[in-house]
Image (cartoon, rainbow, N blue to C red; front, side, top):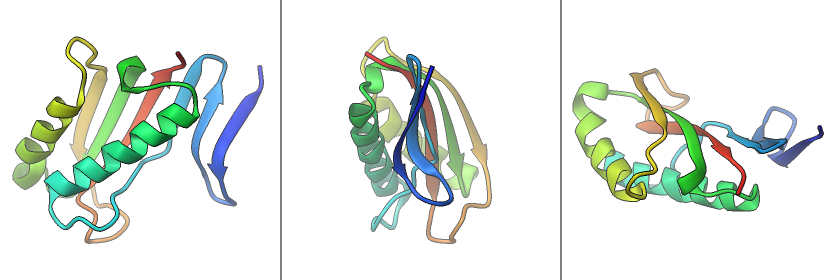
Length: 116
């Protein structure tokens, strides 16, 4: 089986496919300053990368969500996440608090999906 790397640079690939699986690197937001807006931005990036890799959110297998402040931001992120998911297609998920790459990043999400 071959590995297909998507949007690669010298440090990482934004996504890759291996057989029927799609792996995304942690996706971070752009300009939004609150966790709800940042979550919307990250999920839009995930939608785009999954489409490019031949998948979509209905084929998610697993998600890991990193929050810079889980106590403050969990409920707001979860509201956006729940609205984004299609009914009946929730993946396995882990949510944890972590020090993220830059102080303005409040959420980072990585997923694994099956190809369509």
